[in-house]
Length: 554
Image: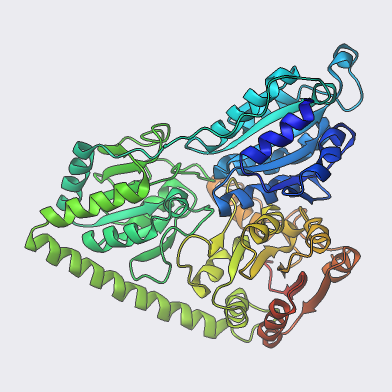
């Protein structure tokens, strides 16, 4: 059989249902094969960044490896930013790109380059298929590596002539693997013993808790030890119910601020994440002086990688957290149980005080014009259904969004990792395909939206009923905040107006941009119009864009 058939049969055998792609000439073998495989839908995007972004979020939502198909060197280059985000998010992806005929390799043909070298820094494995006999074993390994913990993207270069070569080596189905590591009982007992000595324990929950569906186990552990629960600053998921009294918020972006947020914690338990992805340098540890540091991870690679540990355990999250909670409960003294109860009560009171403070902030900003972000977030919550899925790239508005929405756990919230912008609109495509029965709303700043605005066309082309919300302040507000921090950190002694951070002259017109890509849009100036407009947009069951004017930073 020909190489292209081996490719398609390999995808089918691994359960692939969608190929996210932006095609070109070297992808002709794949495209011409699609009619023979109706069980695979090709999701077409107009830019490779949208292709990989959609595939990455689809993989996050389904837990399965997703496939993205790109076009030669420029196409892969266009996708590198999104591929970086997928790499930082641990999204299991098999990314392919067509390559020019290998017989032309020495003559530097048009659009060719060393694709393997281009992709290598942002993938777990990067390889080119040199002959058709390699296709089946390389694709089998690609899916295995992508889904090994910690998961991540792999890249496979597919020369056009190799796809047309004959081979007797047929597609190889997926390996039957049981990867869930059972935690070492001695290690868990040591962790439990340290937890039982803590006077003020804190938990930092990474994305792996949500990906493993271990939210209930984390709730049980947090309540058993009376611990507050924090999220990483940049996260892909909500790993703990945000309405729970023990939930605090997302951690800040440098060691000193993290240390300040953790306060007088004498023990910090890290669960399922890289810990920590700072933006700014700050001297010292992330942890309060003298705090015991523990970690549970699903792979040895992350354990004690960035932090010195007093104890660390490798183990699947549900089993590890459940067993740890049982060990704590069975060994807890009456005094410890009473202390944990008091800590839980104190956290509940703290949460009530914070809610009152936020309510006062909301009331103070209620009638501001342009619309304040607290008011906009409250109106979004009022206008959207309870089962809404939020794809969040609101950036400077994310704290207000988090205060207004209660995320119960996996599937309610999707954000972006790595810090690159443009993930939200692209990601919403993948989320809606993965979760067709839930309303999906992407919330983005106007600057971020322009990085993947072509996603609107894909939504219209595939009739995906996504509501795209753009918070329009006509500026890169996050950069203005960062300039303020830079000026303070480096004593820059510059106080002139922010440079090149306003999106004006001319102003962006998202309603007309959306119309040009087949999506109905509306701009909202008054906050009273937000909730009814959102209700109508969701009910319309088609792609819609809602641009909301919000206040900026001057």
